[in-house]
Length: 134
Image (cartoon, rainbow, N blue to C red; front, side, top):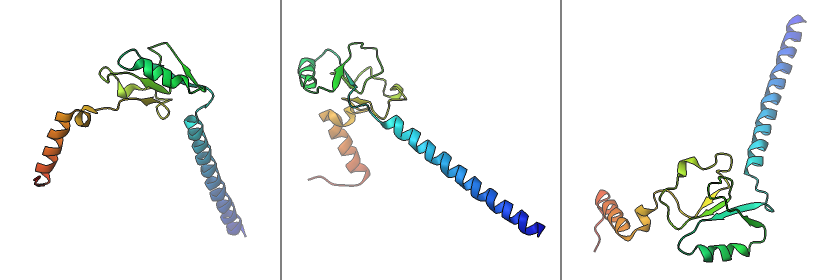
């Protein structure tokens, strides 16, 4: 009788433990989802001066739910446009907004966006994989 009661208590304890783990996991997933949500009525962008910046600003003006910010040092943006990528600190985007921040350049893009670099990298790829180009 005592053994049955101990087994029943053990079983209930295991069920409770599993329930708590499930609940905590669900809570964590909901918190992560909340971080990814973007308030579509309060989306902010920053356009820095440079080649085509006026065109970009005019294009962004058509997006009525997007608000331009002028503080160039601000890390609280969803889209940041800059005519060059040098000086960008890709590693230190705002960690809380990292999933919702967009830049118009990506890290190490000259490897493929520069014609000479693209050619050299394709040639290197062909050499490594022993591919002959006619």
